[in-house]
Amino acid sequence: MNKIIVANWKMNGSQPFIQEFFRAWEKPNNQNKVIFCPPFPYILLVKQFCSLVGAQDCHEQDQGAFTGNVSAKMLHDLGCLYVILGHSERRQYHQESNQLIQKKAENAQKNGLTPIICVGENLECRQSHQAIPTVLAQLAESLPIAGDMIIAYEPIWAIGTGLTATTREIAEMHQAIADVYPNVPILYGGSVTADNAAEIMAISHVDGVLVGGASLKPEALMRISA
Ligand code: PGA
Image (cartoon, rainbow, N blue to C red; front, side, top):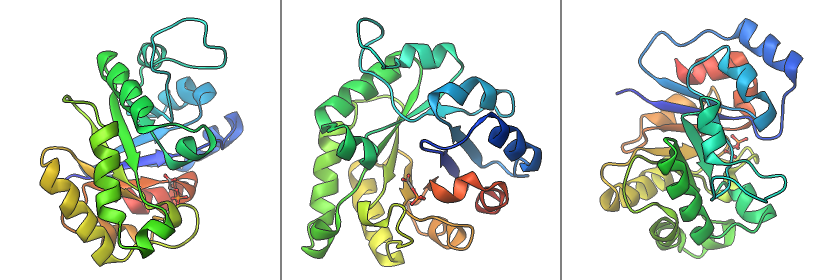
């Protein structure tokens, strides 16, 4: 089965870094989709090296007096095909609500982008056995009503920590999500590395991975995508 690999570079990179990265990068020799999501200023540069490019956020309106924001319409104009929305770092540091994420996702779709909508529970929620209902409630409020979309399940406690959910935790969550959204691809994210990616992607209903730290290393990302 073809997998989707999303490289979330977060607020990292520079022009020399990107030149260097793509000197070492070779597209995997398979049907997997590798989607690069650099910071806004580098979208056009990354576009020179690969066709599947996305952004890490967008505004919920097309244009207007919103200093510092970038719209889905602009991203589409640059050739982006995807946008990550509702990442836990946006929810935490920019107080983004499910309702706002849903508006952004619908605006992204209207402008021809596929939203990659992130959800996930915190550690307290996982420990109190509320992870599945919490994630399903997030999805019910933040997904657009219809249309193309991708779900990314990212337990917050696994992001950038070196901790990954167990195979069983991932399998249970992805099954629960797939029961409600059978036609939507579901990615796993949170400390995915070249060493654990194959095992994670072998779990049923895991359609790919959303990779942060490891996606900044071409060799690691090539192994994940292979
Ligand atoms: P990580 O980040 O792979 O560095 O844990 C994942 C993410 O935040 O999407």
